[in-house]
Amino acid sequence: ANLDLSNNQIADLDDFPLILAACCPTLKSLQLQNNELRKISLSLSLLEGLQAIDLRGNPQRLVRYAILEKRCNEILAYLRGRMTPSELEKSKQRVKDIEDSLQDGMGGTENLGTSDKMCSIEKKGTENNVIVSSDTSPLAEELRSKIDEFSRQLNNVHLSEAKKYALKKSLAMEKAKLIREERRLKLKNS
Image (cartoon, rainbow, N blue to C red):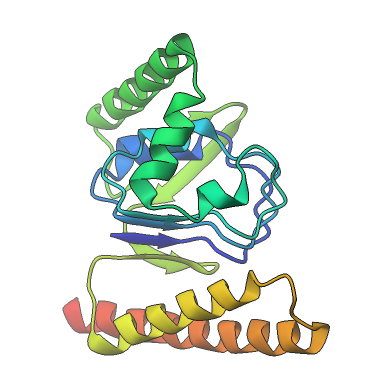
């Protein structure tokens, strides 16, 4: 499964990585580029099945850009290395608690208390530019590839404002096409 949360102005992940670790063990790709993350959560390192992660384009200062350019397993190892053993153990226990609460009988959508909020996670679906997919088509893969390329181009600090605007517009158009394609696939598979 893939989760694309890029370009959503997300400022804080809170317990989201812990919830993902508990709810989505098959998550392979997490896209968080071009948001407003000022702090990258070290608990992202608990997403052990992850094969691709993109955190570039956020105003954070915890992780050097050179680290964010590395492979996923190297980024996760770096984040895990920044946690103290007690923080790591506490985070793993929190993931286990979330898993246990899910085992206590909830359906397709889980409501979990995180800090003073209720967080609703849908295991599969599309809403508010959040793309979670396990069904793919050649068109969907091509659109994801274009979206990744536009996102990478947006990370170039030497772009003019006009070029940034054009890239953002193209990115939005491709995301809209992808959402339509995923809805079509969902209806086809229903």
